[in-house]
Length: 105
Image (cartoon, rainbow, N blue to C red; front, side, top):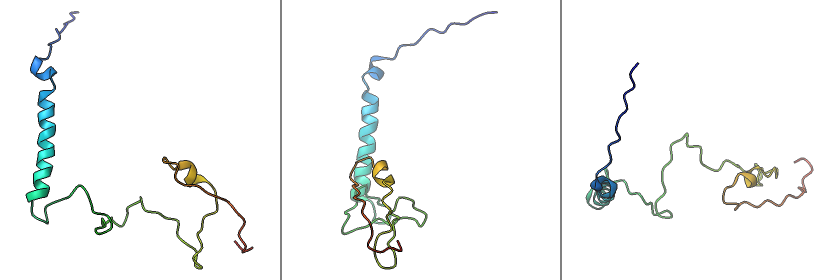
């Protein structure tokens, strides 16, 4: 049985300087810039949306929309289970639980 040992080939100074990757990154940035500036309106895809004036159209099966729908009388359907406050990564949801004046809820 023979074992072949490969000698490691060291990268050149050009590759070690990360210069090729910096140039490729700048190329991607410039390509996006010129497509957005000079592309036709139909083929142009802006990376930034001016939110209040323009709203993005989401597909019907998009699962990131808020699903806490109100009841028929307009009150929220929240039962104060604290699951959304626990799962929120930004800790921006605060829940204050209280009894409802309506005994049927």
